[in-house]
Length: 424
Image 1 (cartoon, one colour):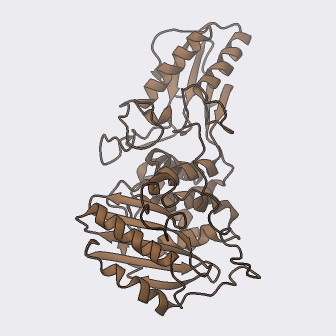
Image 2: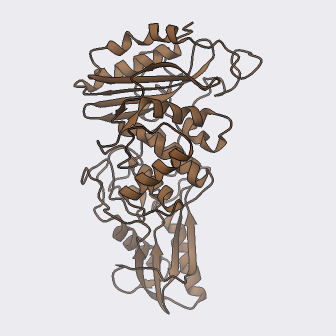
Image 3: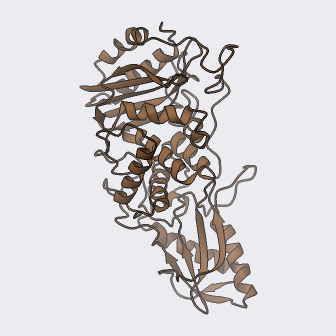
């Protein structure tokens, strides 16, 4: 958790910039609808794809569609819904926003640990060499112990406040190694092993465990915690003792997209809800994400946001929405959305695409895309510079697949075809 998500290797022209010595942005030849249709339509007939198969390809400089196939049909997006979560959070909060975890006084000799919704808060020792570290519970304990000693307090009771979120803490899929209970107070995404991303066994009560860990850290620093930490509500008039701050939202978005991090996704959806003064629940977060996208005038016909991560099969978006999200994030007029592009996995290099495209020289290093996978659902949405140096965004969705690996390969071939295309 203390390493930033890796950025794309320098194998591409600057996104949105001139290509091949072109005089200005968008000077490379524009692919035609007919040319792209010739390249992509046969690949969309791949039997590995399910009965529902949709596609949308947009030219970034012109801001227009250059290929579409069922692009307005709503389908289950799986993890590509994280693109919507990212755009909504960045639009509502800005790339520099940080999530606070605080400790406040709650009486003469009582303190409360207040969760703000940072799933990357860590209790692990800081790693040497990292440019920027995530918020650390040890740092918070250091500052809290100093503040208590200044008040001549060496014995206190400890409460922990999770009231920032409301509604069910368990995702509708139930206990699962893909996601922890959704609570505003946890450390290391409630992982019970030393992993930093991917599946892992999760703590059933992350907030209580975080509070107990904090109590142990205080004890190591000369502060005795009387009894077991208990759930509490911080007083309205708070005297803050200490605070730590998450990495900026831009870094959280990049990590979420690179590794398809479900815990960060649900946290960012709830941060979007808090920013719009909605209930920070699954329902409130879904409404907040939709509202943020409506304000950006994005195509939301048929869209349903049941969660922020895409684990819920009832989520629905169109290929047109996914490509428009990427179009806006690629537009220099929306610099706040840039982390959506820089966080995309790079084919054969990073994140969830590190083991894909290894046999496809055209797509490897050239395709940057968010993956989405559930049983019977495969999606891919990202950016690519075509053979003429034209920046395009794409989304490919399929539902009803029975061969997951075959479906992934079929989508990868579609994206590689765009990369290989002059298509005029």
